Length: 362
Ligand SMILES: Cc1cc2nc3c(=O)[nH]c(=O)nc-3n(C[C@H](O)[C@H](O)[C@H](O)COP(=O)(O)OP(=O)(O)OC[C@H]3O[C@@H](n4cnc5c(N)ncnc54)[C@H](O)[C@@H]3O)c2cc1C
Image 1 (cartoon, helix red, strand yellow):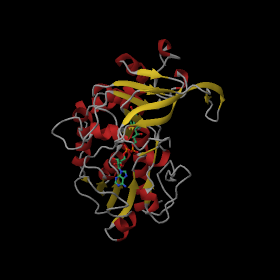
Image 2 (cartoon, rainbow, N blue to C red):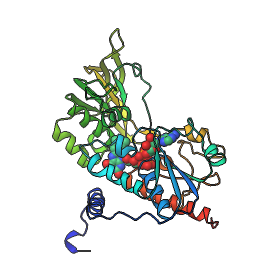
Image 3 (spheres, rainbow, N blue to C red):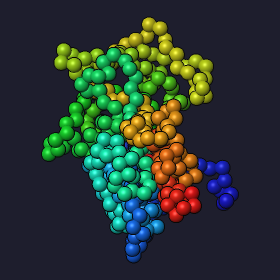
Image 4 (cartoon, protein in one colour):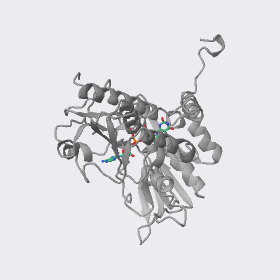
């Protein structure tokens, strides 16, 4: 270690991005094997976990098909992270094309658990192993009155409408409500992305977060960018009720002031309500960004696939092995919402695990 860097922070995210950009720009495209081994493997989900697993398996000679529920591959890289942070044409699509070049087939608009089940893929369609990389896309809500009103979105839905369905453009069919005053509830990275997206769609944007700035879960640089762009932070503030007009459109939100008490199980100081402190903020759009969990569709339709109390698929971190023979899993579907690089690592481990299983040395 160079002494001048000792003890100083490293920008891991930027280093990860540099390595990926450099390898792409310098033509590091892995070659497709001359012939396949004829063994079919299914990968569910085309996010970083699924793409990495599929690419690695294809390099080993397997015939890999990715099944993706949405009409565009890429997972959160395509539908979640906004274009201004992750360019789709310059970064995401070339990576997906590289996986295709390895011979991987990508079938979009196929919802595993609805269109076809894992058991059917294995019993009737000849897939010898399956990797589940279906992410953690099920949003959480607060359960407060008015949450079903028009103009209330989960951050996932809001970002998907904007990123994937280009809802802000007249030539696309999916509508998005261009709010004038938007409240984003939550203080994580996803909340910052939703807030900055709403800002770009022309709104005045408020982050509403029940703890103080010190407890904001978003990365410091994300908070910095949000502030720099003019997002207003309503800290120590918690929504109580969403108000609507007679057509059920959002007109405002009653919020309650909070103060910090003793630390809770997470080690952060617990927010405590200040009695009699309710007041109303005028908003026409509310975006709930309170975290996500894995959708139980796949686990509930697959015999013998165990999940934990957070609905995450139980899998061995070292090789992705689940409780069902021949089925492997990794990424957010196993860990809950995490990071791109961890999902890629899990995809790689899953490919190794599947290869060991199919070569008979599990
Ligand atoms: C807004 C936002 C910003 C983020 N920013 C960052 C960041 O800056 N840096 C970072 O490292 N991480 C970030 N993350 C987290 C990161 O994107 C995820 O951890 C990562 O994408 C997880 O990868 P994955 O492959 O497990 O799942 P995903 O990327 O979620 O992909 C899962 C795919 O599976 C598909 N799928 C789901 N169910 C089915 C089904 N039944 N049948 C077929 N297909 C299915 C989904 O449509 C999706 O395409 C962010 C997340 C969000 C939401």
